Length: 107
Image 1 (cartoon, helix red, strand yellow):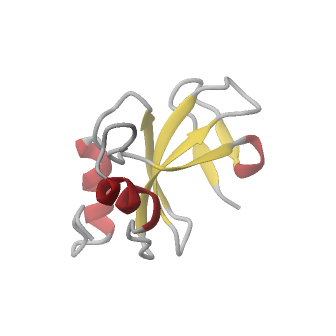
Image 2 (image 1 turned 60 degrees about the vertical axis):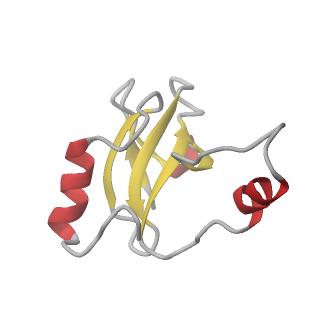
C-alpha cells in the first residue's frame, strides 16, 4: 500500500486517505495556445516507468494539496513537499539520485 507523509499536517497517510491529482510540474496550455501545444499537453506526454512527480490531496485529513516524488514500479517514496513549490526541492533530487545514480529529471 502506498503511504505518503503530508508536509502540512505531518500525518503518514495511506492511499485510502488521499486523492490523486496526477502529474506535477506540467506546463499547462489553455486558451490562446497553439493547437499543437494543447494537443501535446493533453495527449502526448511521456508515460515512462520509474520516478514521477505527482499531485496528491490529503482528502480525509487537512484537505490540502501537496506534491510527492515516487517510483511507479516499486511505490518507493522519495519525499513529499508543498504544492506551491515550482520545482522539486534539492533534497528530493538528492534522495532520488542516491538510490538511482543514473536518473536525471529529463528521463
